[in-house]
Image (cartoon, rainbow, N blue to C red; front, side, top):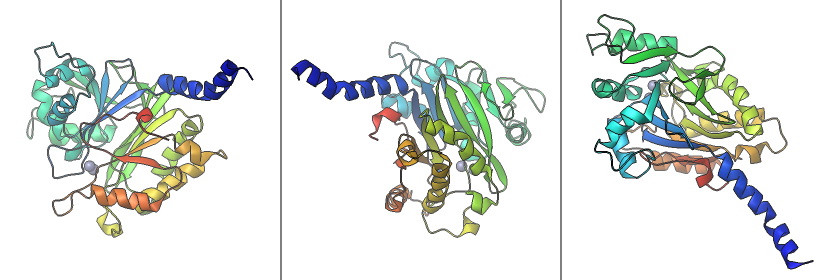
Length: 336
Ligand SMILES: [Zn+2]
Ligand SMILES: [Zn+2]
């Protein structure tokens, strides 16, 4: 066989693979905060941006200011202009973040929004109707804080345009190129949310706090897995951000609507079973799972313990990393 032909045959699959991953991977994912409590400078907030776009959406808003400074210092906010005399925070608030999406109104998911509101620029804030009601009744109510929204108690400053997700369909997030579909999640006595983010042909999934279906006596996760499994089958889903708040073992009455490694394992297995394909394990392994919301117990984070327990559970097709504040995650940075 001529050498050139041999070389082409040898390298052709690699060339194909390279060109596929270079064009296919879309989302930049940056946790501005990713612990599940106590540390007020590291509470749930996630920036998501598509390659080629200069607009982020911010999924939950627990820690904004400190997280943006940290992500900028790590060089992970690609839109920051070093010649701009404004701080990275100001640049992000003015030009970077196009909208907030709030999964539920627990303080560890909205504290940053409250503290940034006097300095923020007008933006839409998307949530479920019940979360919007919690925000206007209990937070932006002119008693606990000025009403920076356009709903609820008077006077309304109107900086945050509260918007509800349409039911069972994708809706465009104003001021951004992204579409999002909302799913309710069961989180003890609170309704939380998952967001399926879409840009062109690509998707990523963010889950706010959630309990397991078997503990919560519901089927919210089952419905969600049923919806996203076809996107794993078609290799369009890049990442799933999901919580593991506590290590095993944990009595069910002390879970408070959260997951442990063994509960996550059962949910992952249900998701894998929903992928109706003989290569379900291999297809699942193309999805990057990012584990978040580890709760401090007795003042220390259990990140290492949870990572070890997840490793030891050896879940087929489950490829994961533990989230670290200010880091940049992209599906194609990690080996399959
Ligand atoms: Zn919560
Ligand atoms: Zn939380």
